[in-house]
Picture 1 (cartoon, rainbow, N blue to C red):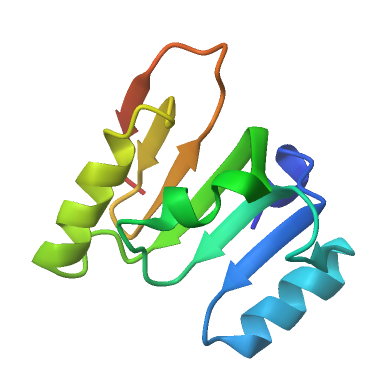
Picture 2: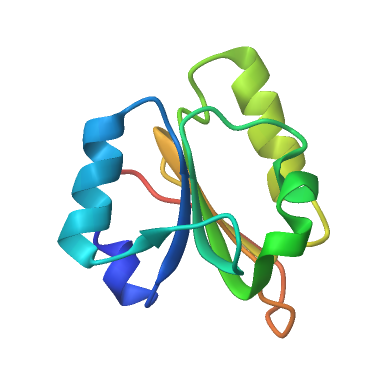
Length: 116
């Protein structure tokens, strides 16, 4: 949750069944969960392979995705690998239990694994 203020996320989309988490994030950081504007952050409990296609019109150059459970099953690991190898993604950070994907056209493609 520290990444929200660090990256100045204002408009977010939370795709989660954890309504307490969603309410906490929205209240604590004074954010709006929106489908109408460009999104700074997309939070997903269960990543799907088409997530970048679904949000193509909703993201901008500094948008990022927080994906939970990226290695919980073989399928989610395969989805994570496909997403991080997508040409739109320039930076990925694999923290085992979760991952971050950044969309930044001016940055060279890099992948990191961080043990937390």
